[in-house]
Image (cartoon, rainbow, N blue to C red; front, side, top):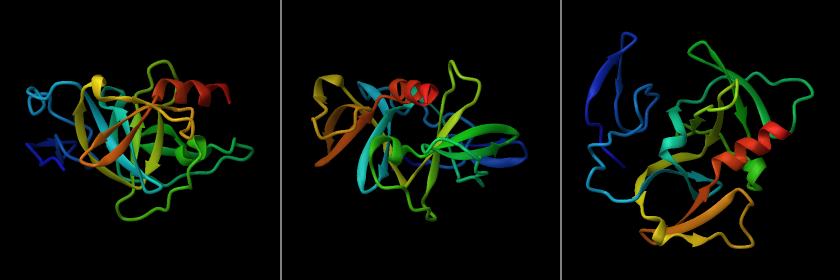
Length: 177
């Protein structure tokens, strides 16, 4: 796990500029990874497996929010939440990718994706964060036939398989449904 580099006052509170908190500052510091070649991935646990998503596609990692369920919502939508005055959709990522639904614990976090072409940001709960990893695509393997269609590749890190989620495909699928 990465250590906290610097604390900055934000909105009257001290929040970490690196690490896994409810920070509104960048999730990682590029200077920390300057010597690490490859793309950076936010790696997390979901249903006992490791998954990764490109760090450039993650807006922030936050503490769980109260979720308001919506009537007649699609199965993948847990509801909506209020993140500092912004309404965000809370998606059930395990349901979308074919895993067991998350059990909310003290280590549960929300990964908020950048809403590039969408009106509403989308977040999903994860079991717990692992770390930020810089990995070269030359180390990627194609996702197996048994993997979710949203997993585009995988790699091994410290004897653990990390499955990489295609957030663009995920967001497009959610927008269609």
